[in-house]
Image (cartoon, rainbow over all chains, first blue to last red; front, top):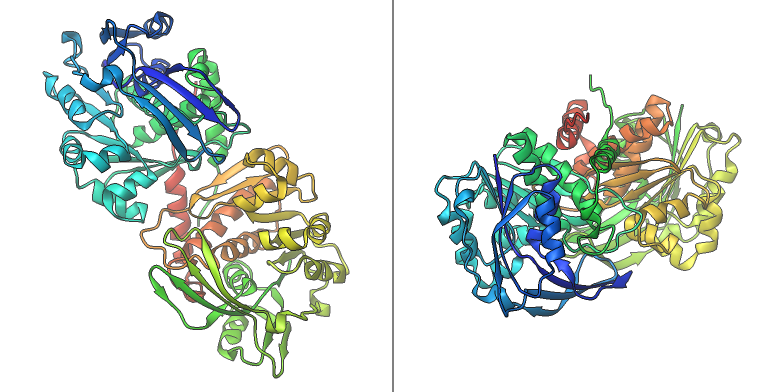
Length: 307
Length: 307
């Protein structure tokens, strides 16, 4: 039951009301692979970096069980770089700089040993590139999870719609769900989006939790009220990593099990935002995660006996 | 175990993206008393209206078990009137008109038979008027719940701070909690506010649910994702009414029971927003409420067995 993770491995420079970083390691696939590695040890990564990318971080991924055969290292080229500044409420941000670099001509190549994985996690990327990955699979994965963003809805909506027909689970945030569906009510938005391809939709609401929809049911996972949130970067990717990592571990893609997976995903996101970049995701223990999940259980547990 | 409700009984004119009303019945105490009446039948109301206020609505309150001895009807004067327009996201609104009318000189008089109630719900009003009510009680209620708003933080902060020292539970929204505490993190905001007097704080987050804090614990109640929200007016007051109505019915002010009370409060709010004004709160059945609460149970129920 192996897991293939596709997405950016990159540099970020982040400014929040609580501080500022130089270039640090980021990228959707970095967060996804790290978060998933706490649940599942057979992960393959497909991505691209320049030869400026630190071997140290690649060693961390490798030591946590991620195979790097599918990671292209482009000699003489530079890694993808994003710089952004969060507003005071941490819910919105401005992009200060984007350098596509190696990402501009990224042509994903799925290694032979990853073409038959059961779980495929497509991190946010050009929809056409996400399709290229799916088309290389020699066996339809048991579950394909797609993450995307408003940017692709603006400039590549047709491609995105095609990709949507090829996946099982879509993860987007609430404003993206509204944009994609043209509906303000998230209930109506979900029902429209579920007609576009995916059988399950996850709407991420940041500090307000996440909603899980299929055509008949809805589940809500809260976000943990945190004393300090330093940097929201990577929260959504850590969430996706915990989600698919837990599913790959338990080999169960039922809606009931996805509820549990969302709680584990939310727990991983709650760690990520406590420090800048990937730092907090590097050294967690099984016990840290268990305690954190217990906080989610306690947070929403109530006992109403209806007559 | 009777319940005293204090607050406005008034007229509203409301505009939302889904329609527009003429003058309809509103006011914090109207929503609170209606919502509470589904749980508790021994309610006293202290408020003021002009002789323009419809007897029909007062009859509805009376028929649902609310005593009106404490309702002053001012001859030749007009009832409080508020007109507002909600923005497209329904989370923010502009006040178009406020006519204080009878509210300008409102001097609350608690009837003799309500001076020893066990539960006192102070709806949003001038903090000094809220204090006047407390000072008329001849026995300290078992539980005093205070609702207030940013307006009083702007123009009567000292009075509000004094009132806070006299109550047990404060209900405010997230931006008000941030304003009152000067803290962005709601966890930190709650801990600061809990040093100002109340032993329990409810932070209302509208469509994002509600948080319940005491000094040691936190509980989160989701809001139900609704297909259609027509009019958010009165949602917070219906929430407060369901909350204190349930507590008055069960005679249990423990944190555990407040968790249940918040779910019932959220259920009442979820009905209110489905139609304009108080309409949806008039004719609910016990079965309607039970089914709605079951939806809350289903929404957040998950089963994680940690080793």
